[in-house]
Amino acid sequence: MPTKLKVREIKEYFGLELINEEADLDRKITVSDLSRPGLVMAGFYTYYPSERIQILGKTELTFSDGLCSEIRRERMTHLCQEDTPCIIIAHNLPVPSELVDVAKERKIPILRTTISTTRFVSKLTNYLEGRLAPTKTIHGVLIDVYGVGVLIVGNSGIGKSETALELLKRGHRLVADDVVEITQTADNELIGTAPEIIRHLLEIRGVGIIDVMTLFGAGAVRLRKKLTLVIKLEMWNKDKSYERLGLDEEKIKIIDTELPVNTIPVRPGRNLAAIIEVAAMNYRLKSMGYNAAWELSSRLTDEMDMNEL
Image (cartoon, rainbow, N blue to C red):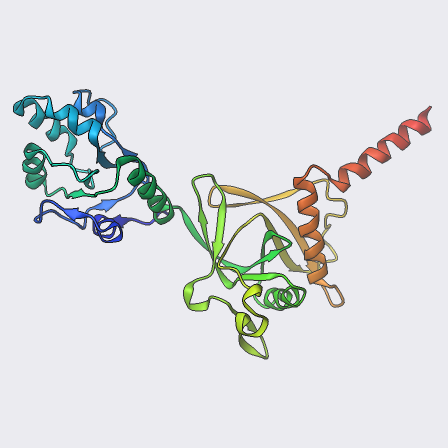
């Protein structure tokens, strides 16, 4: 679920000046979208997104300067709603006294920055999208295999960490072991990382905790990686039918994004690391438009057509 952010954190992160000291800096920010309320300044209040941070730049404040004090106060009153988290003035511009009065009554923070409006909107949008993005924690291992972000999942003790260790020995890079924190970006991409407390660590039963960066070097780890493929490990079940051609692609939904899944049955003698390497390379081929299963199906169809002639 999205994380709620306080205005205080925005103020401290960007070093903003607080105009009204008595304001409530613990007001919640719940959406990453911003608002430049030019239409509110012009007197159009329909569809006003009051739950967003309001940004006032040269355009809005120059327009408000041309209004009489009574109308300006009316517009500022509509600007400061109950759910408005804060109002930010760009360019270090003077703050209208009417806005200060209304914000003081409602304890809405007025913050000011020296940065230009466009640059500040860009910086703040990136920050909010990162902090308020939907997140989920999954039990598994995330590893970069040939540039493909592979999330390995399965029951405890199935061999996820041991498989990751073998992949590390083959030159691939660890992102997270045991706990993977996944964030969904605005483009519906899933970015995985490890909790800071277990970053670069790998648990091997019978050995204990190992520091991957110390043992294998800095090139064996990554801080974050985009998830593109899920490998599900499960004990071999002779009564279950596993995919043999690859024509039917299984999907899994994480947050709001679907990812392809390969279910790999585990039994003694199977080289899981080699299978995952092949699965990653096969995924890359599919993303470039080549599908071996479709190619085989096409060949069989052509062969049957030839035999019918």
